[in-house]
Structure formats: C-alpha cells, structure tokens
Image 1 (cartoon, rainbow, N blue to C red):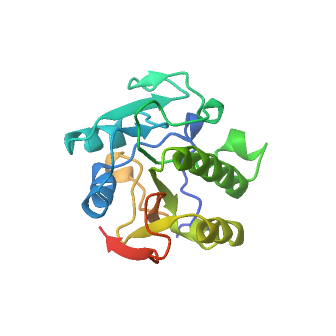
Image 2 (tube, helix red, strand yellow):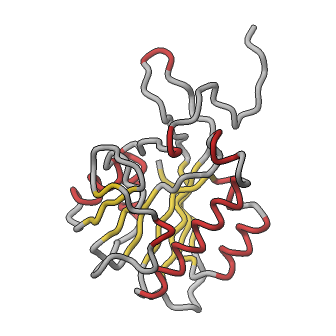
Length: 201
C-alpha cells in the first residue's frame, strides 16, 4: 500500500526556474471567456506554450523569459521591467509559484506570488490594460491574496474544473495535484461592475 502524502507534494522534483509547460487547453479556457486586447506580453514564456495558443487566436505576442527554453527572448528579468513592452495592452502568463526547492529557501512561496502579482498590476495599470494570471485556486483564498484581489480591478475568476497534469511520462504521469484558476484584472472595466466567477474545463 502506498504511503499517504499531502496533496501538494507531487513526488517529482521541481524544475529549474519553476518552469512547467502549460497545457494548450488551459490557455484555450482563458481565451473562450476573455477578449484580450493586444498586443499581449508573455513574460514567463518558457517553451511558448501559452504564447503559441494566443498567437493562434490572432493576437500579436511579445514573448520573454529570464531563462532560455528555446522560445522568445531570453535573459529578461520580469522584476527589472517598469512597464509593459511598447504597444502591449495585456499581460498573460503562468507565473512561477516560488515554491521550487531553491527559491523556497530564500522566500515564502505565497509572498513570492504576491510580489509577482503586485508588480504585474503596477505595470498593467500604466497601460490601462488587462492582466491574466494562472494561479492555484487555494492561493486566492489566502488572506493577503484576498486583500490584493479585493483592492484591484478584478474582472473575473475562471475556475478550471479539470485539474492540470504537468508531466508527460506515459504510465508514470502523475494525477493533477491542484485546482487552478485564471484571475483576470482589467483597468479599463467599469469600477461599479462586480467581478464574475466562471467555470471552464
């Protein structure tokens, strides 16, 4: 009988730079519910998983990453940027969750995510733009995250009812360990309009 373990432990070691390729269906769920204003910046593009789907939907995409995964412009530190790339109106990404073995020794994963979201909001606000981030659903319920979401121009939350499987190892592929959601901010939305919660798979 296998040993019981917490649901947040997958049994696989974390990847370098917290990089996990986002399945195509996940981005497709976002695009079905959110008409993005382009061009779109993908600042954690990895191997281009999100960027390719957005491009296929007809949007121009500026793809960058700190590490070189063979797609986009490598070597750009997200936190060194002070504004969206010229012309971009939206930022869409699956951000690093900050709980990789190297990063977690230096900072708390929740704090790392909050720092990322705040910085993304600051840059998106300057462009009156949109911000769409893929996050774990339980992160939304955290006290600090809830405060940030309540104070920002949250437009909608798209809860994914299908769990994401990040690994592709045939019979050894792990089952989805977490529920995820897209959180979408829009600085051009009417402030009096309450945010919506949607479900997709």
